Length: 171
Image 1: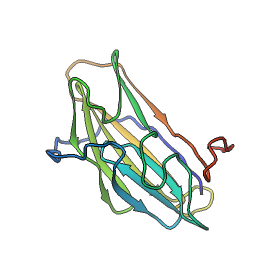
Image 2: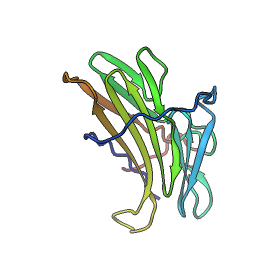
Image 3: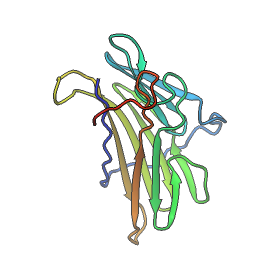
Image 4: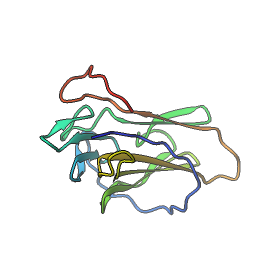
């Protein structure tokens, strides 16, 4: 299967939701898993995730699959402040922890200062095979302030293909 990540920034309507008052204490703990016909996703409570292939036999595409999502994530910049998505820093908070919905893991909503970031992971059909063998990682950034802010997003995919950390691959 193919593994594709896409960063998308646009305005969206996401209202704050009360997070679980007792989240897991380890960001390496799997909060939920999603399995399609070809791919599986494990997501920790803080939005870090890992991906594995399920057919013809299970093998990892990202480091830590299955069950140990800790190294793949996003880095967010708001003006001069930089943090990993979901990191507990000054003036940041989860508005909603991730949850499974259909063929996606949605709703990881995290606020960093005046910027609200939503992460959605989805299993989608490939443009080349037509099969649901692609993971789409989407990020929506919304400025809730009346002032403009300089923002950035960097996506890290920590690849490890079939237990080989140096495997060549193409995106």
